[in-house]
Image (cartoon, rainbow over all chains, first blue to last red; front, side, top):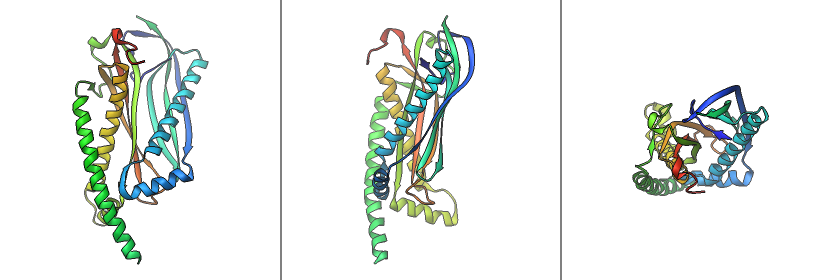
Length: 106
Length: 154
């Protein structure tokens, strides 16, 4: 499955257009991580635990999106966008969406 | 007693935060030099020269937080309004770091350019109360990989 955030894919042509597909996940941090992060907040810098958590969440959202695209018979998702929103204290939603298409070689 | 604690936290935040920021900026500059050859552009579609490249979605993210000193500074700044330079450097560090991580991933694929680069910034809440605790910056784009070098890293 080809995933791209461009509207066109170099060297390929869109044969069929399936519309939007999306995948999302809501993640919250566990208490231990939150505690460590609040300590790190004193001195600043990168919060590696959160970076990894959000990276995993994004991977998962992409997976859901691609499986949705597979289910309707697409072989690529183009024009992919990410969106993140904090829905409550300690939890955020990660969304990935794009256009499912069938691509042919030119 | 409480005042002493706050003062200690301020000093700790000031010293360590400043050290960490200096070190981070040094690391960022060094890596930016190393990745200078890898073109990153926010253009929506690539020029004709890239017509025979493979494409791959690449991304890099980072969560960074301010230190106690800077968040206090920003809180005071809020009273009078104006430029909050304490947060400006935080966002700058985050963005540049995210782009570098994206470039790292693109390099692993053997790409020679990243097109349609987009930023996405969000606030990671939880431990900060009403202030800005930490932010996440995500940079993503499409890496274009020359066909003959495909699978060089995998």
